[in-house]
Image (cartoon, rainbow, N blue to C red; front, side, top):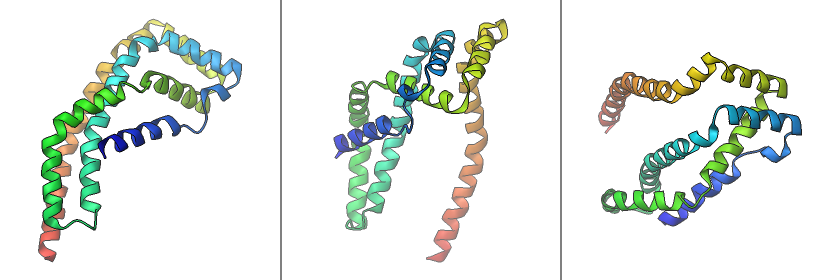
Amino acid sequence: MFRRIVIGLSLVACCALPVQAAELPADKKAAIKELLDTMNLKAMVPQMVMMVQMQMGQMLPAVMMQRIDADKKLSAEEKAKRKAKLQADLPKMGAELREEMGKIDLGGIIEDSIYTIYGKHFEAKEIRDVTAFYRSPTGQKMLKLTPQITAESMQLTSEKIMPKLLERADAVAERLNAKK
């Protein structure tokens, strides 16, 4: 079952892009390539791949737990047993998932996604303007600091959201318990 989920996630990742980079006009494709070279995308891809792997590793247990909860054929006792087994298997599953994801050309998927997204939202001239900015001292500083800024933003946002989310989760749990 685990392998089917990994294969399914892989297919979704590979097939989710509506417009492929190959369909872009040559001038736009060349402008995006120049931008990616300026941004030094090749050096950033391993970090992006690691982030994708981490996100998938975090999502998979939650998705699998939801699937167990949604299975109407299982009794509450069977669901509890499956959840306990899943919890026990998570470390092994995580290692296998990383191994399976290593077989996917995530770097190629990321690069193709960037071509698709930039190609959708920007004209070739606009992409060249962005490239010019990234070549400037301020643009270089932004490129250098973006991973740190992103990490700090995610951490700070998470720290601010989590107490509010837990408070609301407690309120929902109380309402559900009151209905019983």
